[in-house]
Image 1 (cartoon, rainbow, N blue to C red):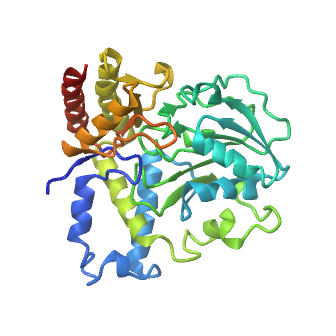
Image 2 (cartoon, one colour):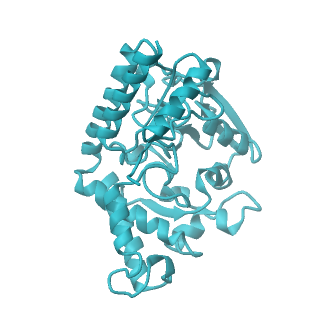
Length: 360
């Protein structure tokens, strides 16, 4: 069977070159006589894998020296708790609610202190990013939290909120490495790898060193303290070794493609093909305010649930899979991450045009 065009929101499409390399090394990684899956994380060969992965990520994102890179487990959901456990010194934090995952993070933080929802786009089904130029930031807030790209709703912060000097924490799971980023503007940037970087099971945390302390909330488990992992080079326990290995290959793939500036151009080109069609289509339409559209996740609908279901079914038969929208919003969603080739988007649009002609 030939490869399909996989528009899944995560676990998502990976670069074919990376998959082929991993397949070639599956039984014997660089003459070790074993797979990376079988390798001790304490071995020299594995230490080199994780060290190279970190070095390449630092280069790609131009990460300042006073930030640590941690390869952790538990996904973004575990970070919903780790962030307040490690940062809520005053037991106060401000959250900007732009979708389901920001909302879940906010709800989780309420277990540890006062989590204020200082802005929200829930009034219009999270179809836009609220104005964050003059927010009611709490004077004693330990941090301000955002989900920078909202996978379900297809919105993206084009400008970071004015946090009035407070530490910014951002979940970047679905826009990680899709464009250049100024790491110094954040206290913590984190993201699950399974959308734009690697397989499920790895979460990458980039954290400013002054935020890594022993002064955490009482009762915080050892495994949920950033200091534990920072002090041990992400090797306090057995890391998600194979997942990190794949992430490392994706970092090299991105470097070979010209880095994050080149990826942003490519992603803008891809997204424009789909958005331009949605803007002129008489059948399909996008659900997000134009100024806040994500380059990574593109939700769209026909306005008729039965027709939506018919489209998803016929698209799948034609080799365009995982286009069904998130269960909470319905409709369709095309996730067009870094590894989705431009021809995948071009062919999807050609299929949509054909479907439109037959069903109007």
